[in-house]
Amino acid sequence: MSVELIERDLHLESPAVAPVVRAPSRDLLGRIGNLETRIARSEREIDAAQAVRYRVFVEEMKAQVSADDARRGREVDSWDNLCDHLLVLDRSIDGDAEDQIVGTYRILRHEVAMAHGGFYSGSEFRVGDLVARHKDKRFMELGRSCVLPQYRTKRTVELLWQGCWAYALQHRIDAMFGCGSFPGTQPEEHALALSFLHQNAVARGEWAVDALPHLYREMDLMPSEAVNARRALFAMPPLIKGYLRLGAMVGNGAVVDQAFNTTDVLIILPISSISGRYVNYYGADAGRFASAS
Image (cartoon, rainbow, N blue to C red; front, side, top):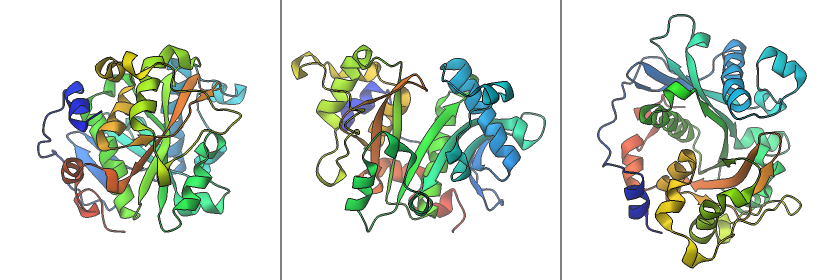
């Protein structure tokens, strides 16, 4: 499957100059219009991001949380204390920063993960093997991506990516990975999209990653002659299509997450695999969107 066909399916145009204004704030990673992205500065901001996650993952997607978290209206786990929390804020909303959070991404850096027993997605995939094969590389894990429904627009997604890109460059990251999710716990309902991913985007060689054996669910559910690429891409979650557009690969095997009511695939994106047009678009150095580390 060619990058060109993926991009035509997504109706992409050649990137224009991104309307991003660099701000004097040292921790600001990007701005488009009234939206800006940066890392959470306080426990209160993290708490507000967890409230946004609750609205998306629990109220909308029917994820399961503890009775206490449901009472508080927060989606929380122990990894939150280890991660940086990327925020998208709408500065046109009256109130404090906590009231302006409309999207979030959770980021776990390599050295933090290694100091605390590994990465979150290691509970589903053999990411430890991947990291061990690349002792000279620095990884970061992306997770808990969510945006409030009314902000699910191209510019919000672009701003999240600008934040991730600037953060990765700021911390000299060599590769990103994380789970991409399909709704529901029946992989067979996504046979077309999962088969397409298995047949066209599974990571090989040094980047190969398998689902844990006791959780492994087959992705190759349809013969290749029955897989229509355009229909498969149309059936795929936008976030996963976005990763493919950038040059990402996927792990071998899907995993059903009963608590989150999803079917997960592992996304692997070496920085060196990102298409040059997107490197140019988001900025070839961290200084465009972020201060130097």
